[in-house]
Image (cartoon, rainbow, N blue to C red; front, top):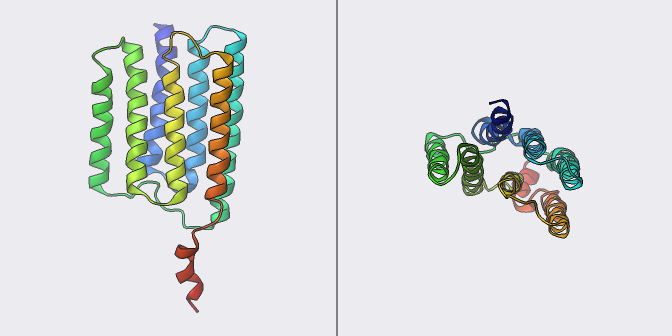
Length: 205
């Protein structure tokens, strides 16, 4: 029972770190929730994986990139834009109803074919991807769009924990490089506010 709880708790924390910011969070709180997802992901890797060089490398990679580097880079970029601290997802009942329905469907999809722990993890992954797509479709702000992409990236990383065997080291290194490039290019693209949206403000007396 203790082992089952140890495996379940990181997935539940990851789910909370995905759902809370989308439904109740602001743009500037997104880096904190990304770091929380990364910490839950690291905990999940530590609990599921046997102590090995590969597990240690994976933990270091998650803690360094997903808990520290990516959230700090996005926090710095969002502050540079000097935009209002708006909701991550627009607050309206229609969007909330769609989001809740997608989360329920994700867990319904995961339930039939998996064991209890696997079903929970797969449900969390499905909910993360669904909520990220909903965020992409409801908020056209570049920071919010990029945050949604990174939420999805973390969900896919959680999905990898379901594999019976970890990725070979070259594949894992390539995936890490892709994540680094995603963060670097994304923060570069959103570093400067859109001139078309800033123009009306500049024309005011």
